[in-house]
Image 1 (cartoon, rainbow, N blue to C red):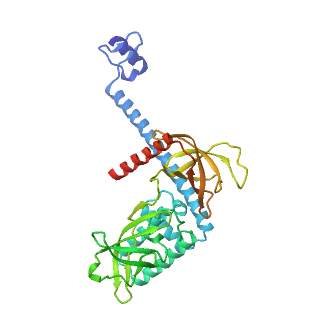
Image 2: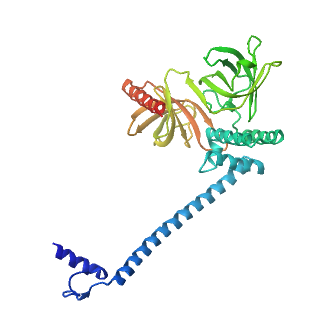
Length: 371
């Protein structure tokens, strides 16, 4: 067996031939010397290096092409939203803060945008910027939010930052033991801070305030929120508390069915519509946003209308559903985007199917709590 292997190697790679004789008598191949072996090894190394260099050049080309495409899209989006030079520069800085692979995601994802604003605000504060510089940046941020239509969050849609609070929002001021020590209304929401005016019956003193002000508030059709906002100032004359913004919001849902954020593909087929004839009935793919035992939210380029009836089908490793009907109860479309967020309520869902969803939801929540 070893002799046959030796002959095979010698026949295929004569330079690497070896043996006790100077020649292979059958093939008439001389034994390789140390110089020939070195040359062969060098050629092999050069071949491997050329492959590595080729792959690196290919990756660099693809990254360059992606940057060019992303840059072209950014220019188009900036033009569509009428962003000026300062606003475009600010968007690039915000993308750097959040590590966005594609700046264009800031045009369509409000949570990502809010994270970018938070990063920019923290950077300004770390630099101990002058009041004039902060005011200038405040104006640019305010103009940018208005142009991107991020000034308001629809009722029922969870918020991701205290910058999304509405003027006049009632809040409770809590002690460290979570007892209510004051009530108030949100009076001003700026990009770098927000202010709350305490009610006349609130017995607040500056000594009762810590480095963070613990607050709670509710949003209609959404949930109860708890926040720890960094304390800035308290004016006892006007009873106004000023705080920095935060992205750390604790939210409890006000709904019968607990939902969990998701991101997996599902199949949707429209079977009934009040505003128009349904399409040819062919299913189309969408991405889920959240799901509960009572309904599902998803993002789609396919146009649907409120009160449309759709059939949901999905088959993943952890959740499988077939033929579940849902009625579209709400939709919101971001300006300038062909995609829309749809909220569907399940119709007469079978108990076994609902149990599968509930099990999936609680397994996901358990994973999130264990992180």
